[in-house]
Length: 253
Image (cartoon, rainbow, N blue to C red):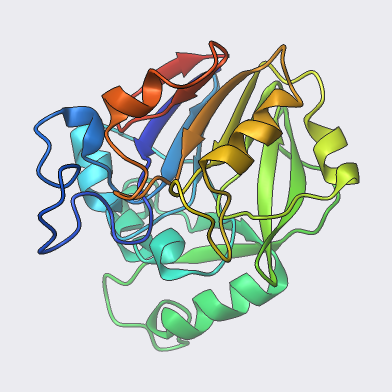
């Protein structure tokens, strides 16, 4: 299994429009972050986790030629705002794109993309097949997907475990029974928004505390804002098994 980080930024991305901080002015490519998304590439299928507003750019940048399934963690726009841009994949296969999310997220998608579900749809609109998921494992082909429920303040969000890979975004609380689902993972991805505490995201120290619960796992931090600091400077402060992810990073699991 190969993991490609398509985006590792928070809802505004980095650089932030009109910001003149040292991170937003950095010329280090690792400090330039699109909205968070990863592509899980298996032998028989490509699984995208989240489809934010930068999806078109991400697909073109990394020469992605096909998608088989899209997992949606939650309904916020930085995770669903690019769904219209999956149209070329739908046109290429002449099949609806399967979306997997909890019921409230699917309802939000039906509202925001009402034209895609209209009985009298305009030619060229995207077509989706909606699949409700809960905390139970489900299969995509030969691959089992295990949802991991976390909290984003009061909003329920799904992370996912795929074989030995766990992906958690937009979280500030994970119950012990959900943490247990991550045991013995080879790779864990978790959000780390900034240095200071935040009402609905783990900050750097909180993300490190979670990572230290899994000393045998390689942990990557994502959903990073310009308030975290420069990639180079923060990386030097991290324990060996914890790294900052960056756009374009590819790893084997």
